[in-house]
Image 1 (cartoon, rainbow, N blue to C red):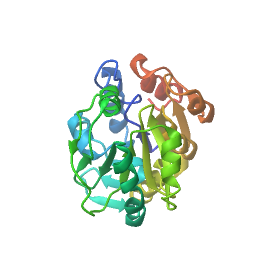
Image 2: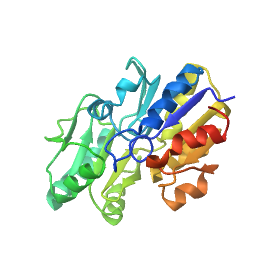
Image 3: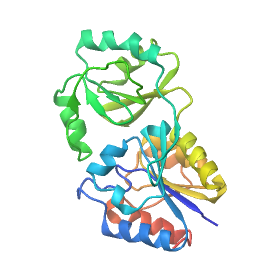
Length: 256
């Protein structure tokens, strides 16, 4: 019996072709809650971005944020946190400043970037989001570093960040998080808090950073618009986000 459902945001809950959460997806979330299934976001995004997109009004029971680095309950109480090691940030920051590569920092209550260029604008437009404020890291706890560069550049940076790993969220940007962190780890923490087993979960995603989540869930569902490698690791491939994919999969597994 499914007791918890986890949802990626971009390309899963949010149809950026429509600029919103499709109405059939909203109805599916409401029906899940009526049937006693807890619903959670499981995303690389920050809670401030979910507010910006109007998603927190949908009444989620909790949030796995920043690819598992911050976990909150529905009232935004902190359940777990895993910051990027400070020493690793200190090692890579001068390199990116010197090479003029955009790098965004995500703290608990703030998102900011060293500067904005065309790559940043394209990335934010692709996910229906506003541009972050510009600013400089002042030594505070950072939970995710977003580098707007190609994989080769990021891999070279990771040589200076031995306690971190990368996960790509779209063609324009790469997330750097603490080693061992993932959406699956975040799921594990929320399930422990709410008293559910992984076998009692279903998860939906479409991107590379969703693969561990889909593998961890009792049922892992890839959206029809997902990358091929994501589809290959899923238990089931549903329709695209803007073609009723979430509702279709929930009906397929007799959850709704």
